[in-house]
Amino acid sequence: MSTSSKLTIDDKTLDFPVKHGSIGPDVYDISKLYAQSGAFTYDPGFTSTASCESKITYIDGDEGVLLYRGYPIEQLAEHGDFLETCYLLLYGELPSAAQKHAFVDNVTHHTMVHDQMNRFFLGFRRDAHPMAIMVASVGALSAFYHDSTDISDETQRMIAQIRMIAKMPTLAAMAYKYSIGQPFVYPKNDLDYASNFLRMCFAVPCEEYKVNPILARALDRIFTLHADHEQNASTSTVRLAGSSGANPFACIAAGIACLWGPAHGGANEAALKMLSEIGTPDNVAKYVAKAKDKNDPFRLMGFGHRVYKNYDPRARIMQKTTHEVLSELGIKDDPLLDVAIELEQIALKDDYFIEKKLYPNIDFYSGITLKAMGFPTSMFTVLFALARTVGWIAQWKEMIEDPSQKIGRPRQLYVGSPKRDYMPVSQRS
Image (cartoon, rainbow, N blue to C red; front, side, top):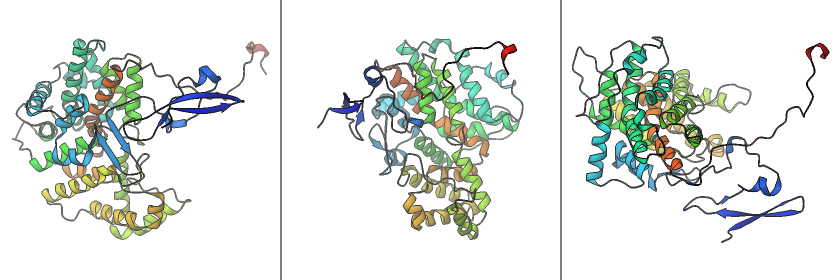
């Protein structure tokens, strides 16, 4: 197997190493291209550029494969739980029974936030978007927890990791409660991760709240499915911020801000709006025709994926979860689900979808499920951020511990004005 590649520029032949991953395509190491040739590569969106080495997540978009540390996402979501997946992403192996117990106990006893954070929330307008609150409140954690901001200290890094996984549900629930004008609900240590979050979101002081185990299991599965997704936009943002030496709370806040974009974390909300616009299964054929019409602005949301060119492996699990939730809640004739099923059937049979490989992705079903649970659309991306925090933290941890990591500094192709001389304003026409 070749370990180098050759590139000829202006009759000069350059040799570049070829790196081989444990699985997946080879990578051509062009890190010394500029030094040897004086030229850069041009790759908008970095779609053909590997920015790092990683052992955390592997995606094969052509085959519809997603692995966390080598384990298929289907197996983890079906047989494991979210905190077990958190341990796997952080430390590389599934925990033993004793390790899992210790990890869960550690996370559980860090779920409280500093009481002064309550007053911090009062600075927001009552109708502030929950994602705006999340960006600010997560960044503000560095002002409250000074003992876990020194990234050179391994112990402080570990404490910061646990704190963010533990406190993110509390902050997310607080953002939700604040947005609807209800009092904050404190976490309870006798509840599991997902059950605790549901209670903090939907309990009120005037009556007892009993967690539905079916909904808790479904939410835990949703968290697992969203825990990490390789070097996506928000993860790359976290790594880029972390490469400067920024504290971990600031890095995760940066990731949340990136996730807020509708092209990234807001896709499930967009899919739900699309299903509502279609209205009934009878209208599906008409809207599919509109989607095929290049001159029509309508676009089908929740289909296709920038990475997956096959069926999103998470979508199959999400579809099953959606049916479980709707059945548990007694929602037998949900028009949005009926539209979704009709659309899915067309997508799997219609030549237009097959040729373009437009398969349903996870966002296609997650919005319906979260809506059925009682979450408003403004909270969808917040829940995404909650789940993705462990992936961001694992990627940040890996980057910090990588001795070859450098501060991120992409290059550019400059197309502006060439050098010119300044003229006093009196001489300008």
